Image (cartoon, rainbow, N blue to C red):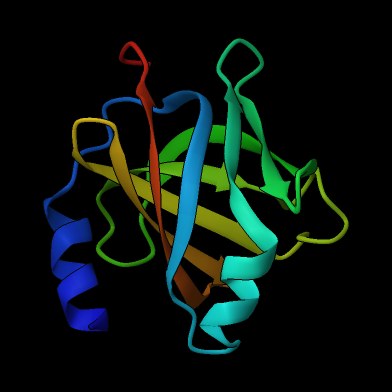
Length: 130
């Protein structure tokens, strides 16, 4: 399953971030049980004016991150980066990467200290290119 997700991620684009609420699902989480992610994490809320987001966790907006474009840990090509290192004590060693794989459907990879820890998908409104 991981190889198939990597192929999809490589084919995606990094033209635009989602806008507003994006519903999420954990696809692969090797270090934790998938059930944990399904029960706790519900998606992300993107604020493109501030270029930041918050995660939707058990109905609350928690764990803030900054949005930018950057190079992927996976293949060195451009991706949409969610950087928590300076905005969240809880996730100070986490960086998420995303690419849009279909209109409004984003595939993400989470890294802790540069090591892959999870894959996730988000379905949200596509924004204008940014």
